[in-house]
Image (cartoon, rainbow, N blue to C red):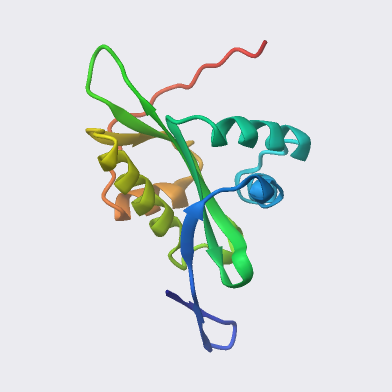
Amino acid sequence: MSALIGFYGEIFMLNISVRKAIFSDAQSICNINKNSLGYDYPLKNTKEQIKKILTDDKTILLVSVVEDNIVTGYIEASIYDTAYSGTYVNIMALAVDGKHQKNGCGKMLLTAVEDWAKNNNAVGIRLESSTFRTEAHKFYEACGYECLKEHKNFKRIF
């Protein structure tokens, strides 16, 4: 449960919960990707990716929802192993719809993934956040995460 203060100072109580994502959440996730993260990835492709993610036992996709099962945010995380450390969970994405930010959705999603990581014997969680996402950095720091280093991110598209 979380309070939301309206334009005129009135307080609304939202009943927020976290659940595993289902295929029919694809449209909401696609909208959040576009509006909150700036990723204009087609719905058709989002659906294909979600179908794969939902069957991957090393990946979890969770959504936060409010009344009437409205999806307000999501988090995707994967278990990974390396030859240089113990098992970690990597947060691939965490996004909350702009209308629902700062009401507890992000914290609830992060806590749920932390619990999942512990249940999967992970030694910790890591994530990357673009340098321009300064509000996200403040959020992570408030949740107990520390910035260890800044680095460049390389990719090659095929």
